[in-house]
Length: 418
Image 1 (cartoon, helix red, strand yellow):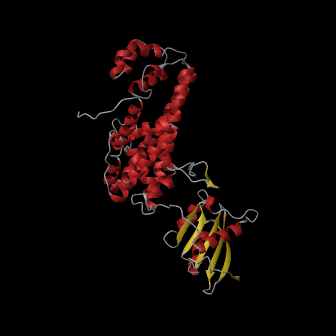
Image 2 (tube, rainbow, N blue to C red):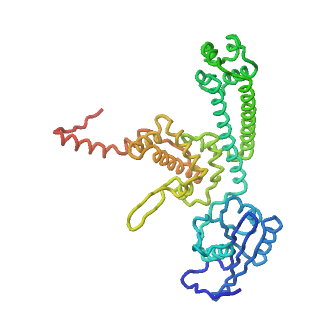
């Protein structure tokens, strides 16, 4: 099928390209070819999503010398297609929010035509697809995070179980799952007749001086039903702890070549080994895709969005609501502001009085992300500016304001050498 278009205003960037509308069980493909005189030919194909069908899709594209393909980032359904095309054809992965078709004209075939048309004129902006190695890191760090959250959930269930059985161990020990807490839980599973001597064997460290309180804490209504539930919970917790250790070991092995970079990242306030590996797994070790630190922060959702109409600026909420890197950086920011005598702590409390805690912590995460960009991109090392940096920076302005206020009250401020 051939048709004539006026391409004088919008230039053709890709003379041969293809748009794919990807679903779980089927793919609609639209191949566009320019004839060199302002016209184009279109070919539509339908493919299933089994591996042999995707191989036929790749052969069809290579047969027509198609160098580039565009498709929506629909869940995980784009990944099988990318697995087949990676290394053979350039793949542009597009955010579905950026390419909405005209309402009332949406079909699978029309979507593939729309994608191909936008790609032909260079109107699509591709999403970040990390290399294969980094994608493996991502899978491991995200699975680890899921396991940690599940582990915390089962620990909370254990706390709830003790409350329902009148057991108050967590009112005496700071960590229920520390050595003393685990010893007492093992004692509770074995029976109910305890003596102060049994408690003395369970207590460790500073808790040896709280044996009487520990003895009172385990006096409750702990029945066989509670013992059964506690044994199941502890078994599940042990499984998650084992899996997390296994994931940590796997990550250390796969990221062993990046240890110098990880060490530089861990110099940043608030970044631990776990968060350093998670950050590197999300953005990769090179940052070639991001042209500046501002672009990286925008991609992660760590800066305000733009919403202006009729000369009025409306809500500045970031369009990126949920992002794995954003979650990690917020956690890092909370840890960074707890570092005493640090620039980030001073900046946070200055912002908090005016903007509130949530916007302030997001601003700290933004500053940390910019520092991480330069550490990875330029090989820089982290240097904390210190809590006196902002005070010294704005000292002339603050001094002028104080002089003005003193003059209004009938006084003159005179500088003296300290």
